[in-house]
Length: 362
Ligand SMILES: [Zn+2]
Ligand SMILES: [Zn+2]
Image 1 (tube, rainbow, N blue to C red):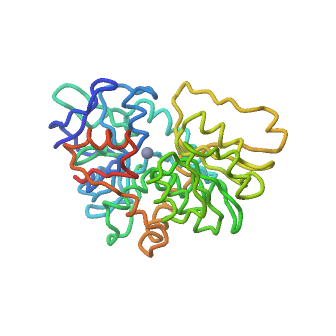
Image 2: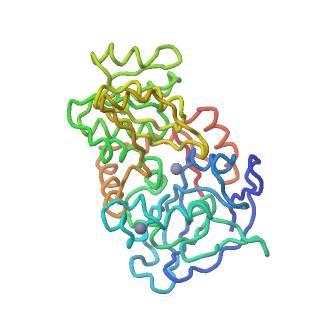
Image 3: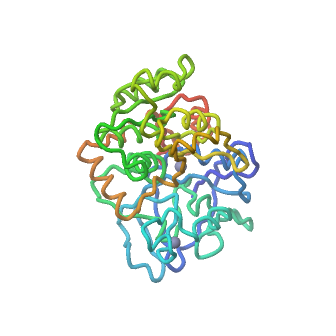
């Protein structure tokens, strides 16, 4: 089968034939329909986050189960699944207390880019190839642990709901699960890519007053379509000045989706006393955040979220239903579709800010 392999940090992906092993215990083989192109892959591909080479990136996959390994009871061939950027062991204190995105098993697996059962199922001859996030979705097929997948209804288009595997759930969850914004409260969303736009949708569905901030007018116009009440182009206007002009004070909540420490500090300055900033973007491994310490005396809180603090088996099917009934029009986030052999173009377009979200259709 074909996959996009990264052999060297900062170099283009190589699209080539690789071998995929049979699923082992508690693993499933999924024929992918589509995979979203997410900025987190780029962090690893450019070395901002450490990762053993070579690896296949791609972590917003959706497809159809083709085979199941021994002891798999939750899936059968023909099931439609969304693959998850976060693996949940189901047994640790976090999983058992409703915070599976903090699962203690997840991080080591993700840093090693192997599967929870150990080792890899991808090879090129004798060369083992790692699975970024325990997945490797820029490929025609994947073998993953069954806890990396969630079963969904069969009438949902896989080439749209694949985005729920990471970015869209992160944005929706940051707004709905983490801020828990209430009707009439204000929320400022910094960054209007796929994650930010999903945060706009989530906040809007909760009845919030939404301010969207970006440096590109094209993205801000789109944010209005998704429900933003106010927009601020930060290349022309300072949100720290503009937000109090609009609201009469700082925002009740802010969400930063870029992972840029300067924007994080700016967003923290834009919330009112007692306000909450949620970091939903992924900063580089060595980044440090500098904010005026006195702001904490005003009761401000800064926290971060992995995958929108969702409980995937419960929340993802629910988000799929809310997409199908039109509440969350996540298909409108997809502004470009590429083939697997065009994947390097897809990343270039993302870096240039030309797309809200693009997908690779297998
Ligand atoms: Zn766990
Ligand atoms: Zn992602």
